[in-house]
Image 1 (tube, rainbow, N blue to C red):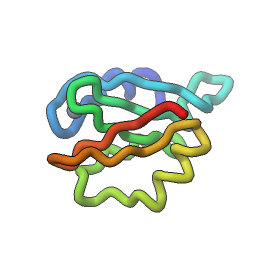
Image 2: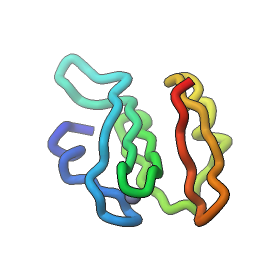
Image 3: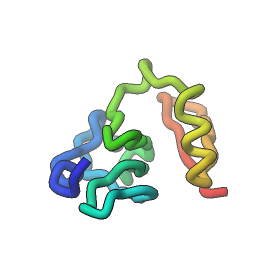
Image 4: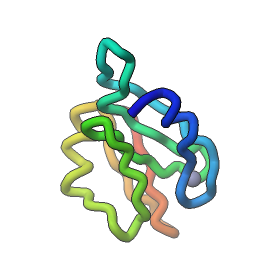
Length: 90
Ligand SMILES: [Zn+2]
């Protein structure tokens, strides 16, 4: 994923601009692993193998996301309402 693509992305739920934490990128500046977070609804969307995973709540697979988040030093905390999930830095 390039920086230009990142700038075009928005939260699929509320269309808010996303913030980014970049973990891995190539020498050319292409983003390989990153975490996109929405400051509005606090959802998070991983970037894996350069692909931003902007999927709705009902299709998410925590089993896939958890090891990635752990590797990046984040922990998943389930919210108690409307599928809201927050991340805490370990
Ligand atoms: Zn949002």
